[in-house]
Image (tube, rainbow, N blue to C red; front, side):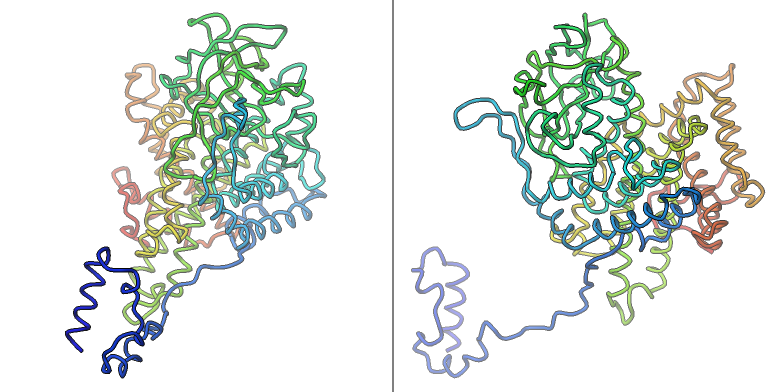
Length: 606
């Protein structure tokens, strides 16, 4: 019997391709060995080998607003209590948090990422159609997001809206939606940001029709003329193969057809959300030496015909965000409507860029919060070496370190969103937004990696959420200006308006000065350094050379200020604010910001 068993297993494992199919799956009853029949219960394939236990279960339905004391606390504390719509808006944010955090919506996100979008360049008859087919689950997420007001709240007249703080409330929506799936957030963010540009510089003959659809809080995925649609989305089509962030080197040309209508010839290396109803793009009107002009390129022309010159070449095979498509496009006399003045393309889109950079920081903050809560949930259930992970001293230290960064990141992101509701804080937002984008977006990959490591092997497996979150984590730092571009933008802000920026940063310290010596010292050193580097007798290159350090110092300083303010408002505890300040800033000019070493859990949190 033992020889037969040995022979059987050897044959099954090594020579399966050489044996007839009937022998590959023998049943015990067909074997002629009495001893094997007697031991059939021992060889049964249904016999249990172990009990499945000590596997931390993911949370089912969660409310991403109510269950996040930092987010909901900040929004409630900084909303206008006199606004008659505030109770309705807060109820709406809670309802949206429940929707975006539901298990059914997470299943939609899983499905949308499992089945990638597909490009259809032609129909079955050979006619160009240039459309992208998405999983239906993707459309469900888009519908939930747009109907919540996430693309239009600052500009629409919807009854669920507070006139005083629409940007703050809308920021909490995109923060939560990013925790569901950042893929659909791409066209949602672009639509939101482009609305600000179209509101100010939209094409003269078509501005009202586009604005009415952009602010309708309705999602309509049909490929028809916008007059037949209930709502529209906008994509961005800016960068070319040779240019990247340096759009001044773009070569796409525009030839005037009639008043404010042009024919575009050229290419774009990255055109995100290719199923959008229109695309903001840059082109030169007269020649290679001309400045850029901005155009709105519709997918379908006002007469209902397809914009035949808008031709998509292929979809990008991206590292992450598989639910959303990014494409390469060629303009072969594509029709475009002029936005703003000829030769003023970059100033025309600058407001859109500013809004998009805010969105990158909000998305990173939201993603970090989601990762932290998954890791925290895991540690509360998983037992190792005789105790829950959450009770193990070293893990407690690591979780505390992550939690401090998570709260400080949320507070900074919401603070910058709030600045958009106050025109008097334009200078503060001018420097604060690129500072926030630089710091939070760079922090996101390492933060999520630490949360992934907490989960062990499960964190590295695609069927669990952390792997997808990690693959998506570098994007916000790359999109709309990489780290160096952000640092140089901060440097440029000080170079052009140092006095206004200094005053704005000083005003932001109101109520904090004198509360913590470390914070006072940090801001004194940081501002003194910037002042010296921007003085008339300083080498202009030095400010750019130290741009990343200056930006990081400003970021951690802003986070420290927000933590102290939040402690005063009982959003975080005084101990949390104190631990953040002492561990991130420390004492004196020569202290290190611990987390800049890239390792969580190495800070002193006493």
